[in-house]
Amino acid sequence: MYLSMNYEFQQKLRRIFSKIRNDILSNKTSNIIKELEQDKRYFIELMNILELINRDLLTMKIVDNLDDKCIMEIYDMRMRIL
Image 1 (cartoon, helix red, strand yellow):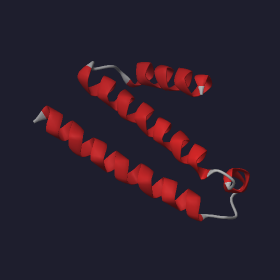
Image 2 (cartoon, rainbow, N blue to C red; image 1 turned 90 degrees about the vertical axis):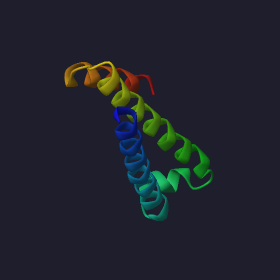
Image 3 (tube, one colour; image 1 turned 120 degrees about the vertical axis):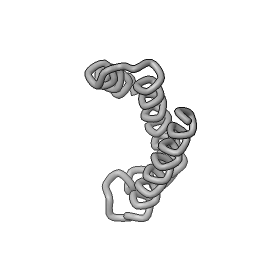
């Protein structure tokens, strides 16, 4: 049951990220998109990386029972690395 709940939540996150990605890619006036119009693959991969990071942190929170502060520290470190 626990894994199923995690899977359902991951699917929901995947749908949310997909919508965000599509919304951003369809917005031609965005400065980010203007810079990346030549090769949108990089932007799509960046969104995939962010999605993977979020899913991994969610899994760590659930499976390893980490508190929010610890999760945020890991998230911040990963964002600095990116």
